[in-house]
Image 1 (cartoon, rainbow, N blue to C red):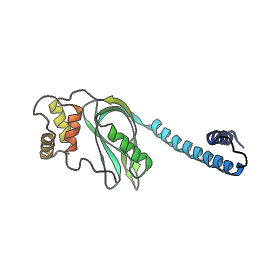
Image 2 (cartoon, rainbow, N blue to C red):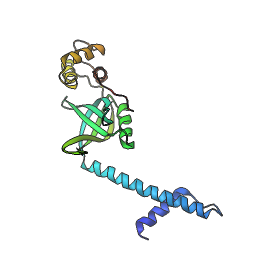
Image 3 (cartoon, rainbow, N blue to C red):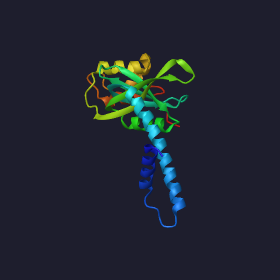
Image 4 (cartoon, one colour):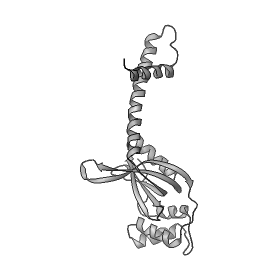
Length: 201
């Protein structure tokens, strides 16, 4: 037995607890199953850490989250420190990791984040890459005001240049014609754009 296997077995035995008298066979099976679970967990964590090692990091404020119907991936719209919008995708929403990231992101709308991003090749299309968010570190609610013109530019960019859709979203959110707006107000305006949020299946 190598050292790794022994450590896994000992860790599993500690997790299961002492063997009750007369239940050696059942206890042994519990230890075996726990050791296998620990091994596969370590493999998954190792893959996650490798993605973090390869990730580019930047600071941005999360404005909105929607889910693509076709891919089930979450789409995160972020405002970076230069005031420009960026879109990142999560892992697929039909995976545990993707679903967890979508739920976490929705709870962080309006917050300033440290974003870990990697570029991954699309399945079945090596010519295209997906900018994927692999981790979000929360730095709290972003309370800095956004100049009205900058916010309108952001909304127009999110509307893909559709001036009428951007105008309606601004009005529907009840934003002022002049002056600054909050991050929350801009996020509210983005939520009024067509197809801004598709509920997760």
